[in-house]
Image 1 (cartoon, rainbow, N blue to C red):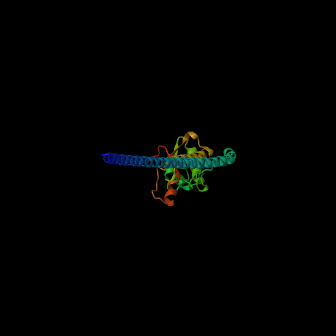
Image 2: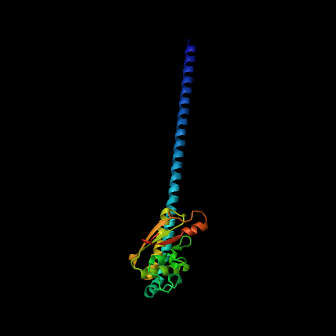
Image 3: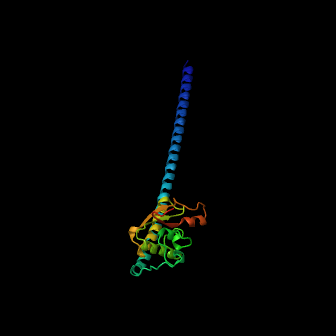
Length: 232
C-alpha cells in the first residue's frame, strides 16, 4: 500500500513540475514578444526622429544660403549706391521703332509698349540658378522701362518674381521676392517713383516651360514686368 501512495505522489510531483515549466516557458515567450514589439516601436521612433532632424537641417541650410546671398547683394548695393544715387544713368530711349513717320514719339503709351522689336515689348529679366542679381545684358531693358515710366507717371507696374521648381516652396517664394525687389530697386535708382512699382513673388507657381531640363528651368528663373491696365 505504501508503494502505491509513493508512486501516486511521484506522479503528482512530475505533473506539477511539468505544468510549472510550461507556464514558465509561456511567460518567457510572452516577454520576448513584448520586448520585440517595444524594440520595433523604438526603432520606428528613432527613424522618424532622424528624418525630422534631416528636414530641419535642410531648412537651416537653405535659410543660411539665402541669408548669404542677401548679404552679398547688400554689400554690392552699398558699394554702388552712392554713385547711382548721385548720378543715375538715365538715358533717353533711342529705339527708332518708337517714332512715327515724322520722327515724333507716338502719343499712345500702350501703342509704344506693344511696338514689335522695341525694348519696351520685352518684359522679362532672366537670372542664373539660385541668383537674383541683374545681369548686364538686361540693363538696357530696365533703362527703357524706367524712361517710359518717367515719361508716363500715371502708369503703374507689377514686377513678378519667378523661380524654377527646384527647392522648397518657402525658399522659392523668398527667392522670387528677391528677384522682383532687385528690379524694383534698379528702377527706383533710375528715378522711377516707388508708388509706380509693386513687387510680388510667385515662386515656382507660374512656369512658362514645363520640362525638367536646364532649357526649361532657365525660362522660369525670371522677373516679369506687368503694366497695370494694359489692354490685351
